[in-house]
Image (cartoon, rainbow over all chains, first blue to last red; front, side):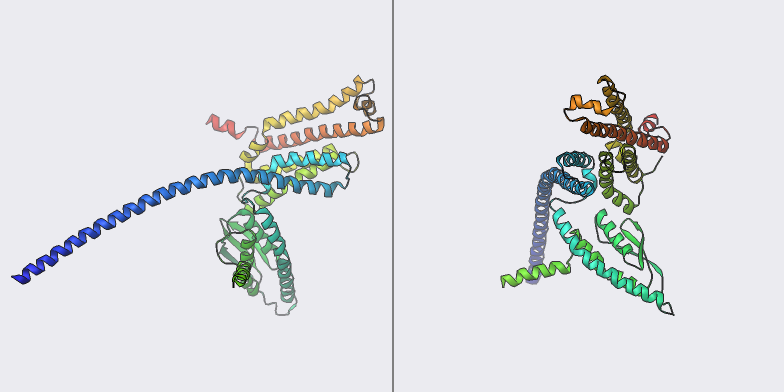
Length: 237
Length: 154
């Protein structure tokens, strides 16, 4: 008798607990949903405000940078620095910049242009070194009697995001002797490589990493970033 | 009509190059009286830059920047500048396009007036050639019917 009661009581207690748990879970879910909803809305609002400001600012900044670059180009071409020709240059650069300020810097985020130019200039020596190395390799392939080539077409998905970085990568690959970019199909590169070594070099993805670093894309760790952070950590210590 | 191309390399490179081509065209026009080049050559380069944009970015993008109506307007303005300067010289008791007579209204010596007059004529020729080149290409590529009209007809 007592045992039956005990079992029943335990059963009841279990059911009550289960109910309470269910309710609690439901409550928590609703709360999470509500907070996430409000958070989503707020994030949306902030994003809209930021995007609006960013668009305005980036449009003006693009215009100014385009104008300056075009004017420098004009001065380079013209070579006449009297006030008449310079004012002609200002007018012409202004008109062209007005027509085409969304062409030169499409898909570039605010404040990034200077950093991108700096990093791109830092990227160039490495790329020239790669070209020299690949040159020697291709010369070796051409000169050795066995001609150890194994031409092949490889495809790889890139993690780069914008058209300008795709094009930089594609042209870097084409500029490197022995490899040619045939096509870009929606983020998938089709590359022709002359030998196994060249294909392997490309597959390590160092070039892609460096270009991602130049254009500040693809959220992963780059060698250069690690070095930057390491210096900060060292200072903290 | 030309279909919007999907080759991203060509598209991006032409996007970056077009402003520089246009500036180079204006340089050729503006320095026509000092160095090789002039209104016609510069106008053709300018028209070619628009054609490049048309080929790589398609009808909609170019129509937003430089529609066919504006091209027609520009070609007329170019001819107007050219003939206007010519007739201005007639009014100032010179021959047609006798630039040196322009010194009376420009308050500079005749030689300088001649240089400025040539520059003005070059600009007129450049405008007209650019607009006509673009307009010819526009007509050939769309078959004389603009896509907007086609959509309305459908």
